[in-house]
Length: 190
Ligand code: AMP
Image 1 (cartoon, rainbow, N blue to C red):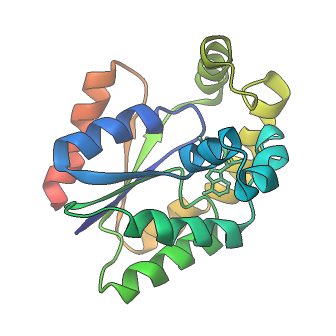
Image 2: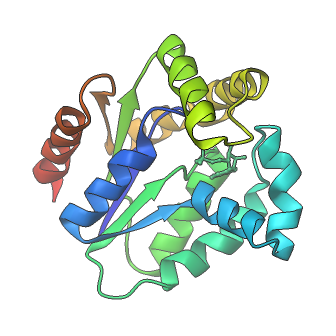
């Protein structure tokens, strides 16, 4: 199995690129944000629990991630790997992922970060707010999400660098150019 993490700040294009990668390589796409949004739409117990947190742009507690992640991973059959989109976002989550994979005799194969500066991110997210009306895409919430990313998620770069699994690509440009750059990184490792 190829266990691939697409890493990057909110609005860096992880969702768009993950779908394309999953399709090309026959990987299971796991977007924790999508799982939460589906639960919120369907008003499940999990959805009700996380709705307020997500609307404020804060992180859902790590224990809840662990719960949904294993279920999500076990729900796929006949896939050649995973593309993790929006997970892990904390060091704790990275440790949890390592343990889950370890139980399956697996490990993280590659982490690719999409590099996009703050101004570009804010512009993209405000545009997405107009198009999709996501409640967590307002200016205040966007700033909160970026600062949480900088404080809690960015330290994962060092974590994966130390494991020799980290690399980055420029996340600004055409969707297909960025996609090809990510595929080059995967092809070097697969
Ligand atoms: P995303 O679509 O990945 O930007 O996720 C939307 C929101 O869901 C985030 O701002 C968090 O509130 C929550 N969320 C998604 N993934 C995680 C995660 N791995 N850890 C904590 N919260 C998450």
